[in-house]
Image 1 (cartoon, rainbow, N blue to C red):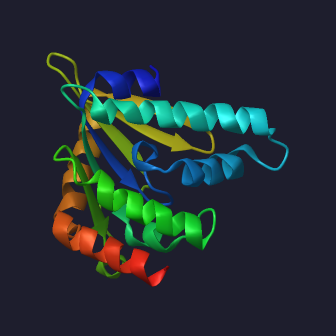
Image 2: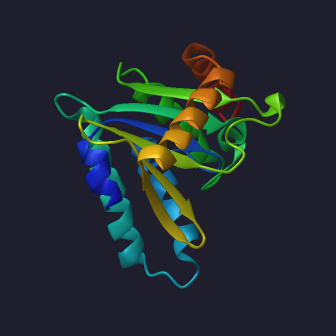
Length: 185
């Protein structure tokens, strides 16, 4: 399986992010900072530029007809993490406010104060495919990438539902994001 292939063919993409904003809503500068860090000190600019370009191209699926639905849950700590610096983070937060103006894009924040929750095992993405295809869960770890279908993906679907229950509403999340962006001005 291939991540961009799943993204392009799913009806809905449900993400739970613990460290950075999902790639589908990252600004170019934010994406470059994430990719530069992931590639390490010896990465060349050409390779980084290629990965950033791919990430920006992938975002076009949110503008297709019909558009893909993106339902993103992010840990509150992601909103405070100055990936790329304060200015990049501010631009990223402002970009999110515009991204969620589209009816098929939702961003919700999981507040730090809730304690343990269904995301204990880390970040994941759940691809909801057209019937008769099963949902596919995707997990990225230091040891590699893992794609899971059927009953294994179902566990991630249940975890996502549990996370959604404890997340702030979309309106509360956007208010928090707007406040933090303003504080960075």
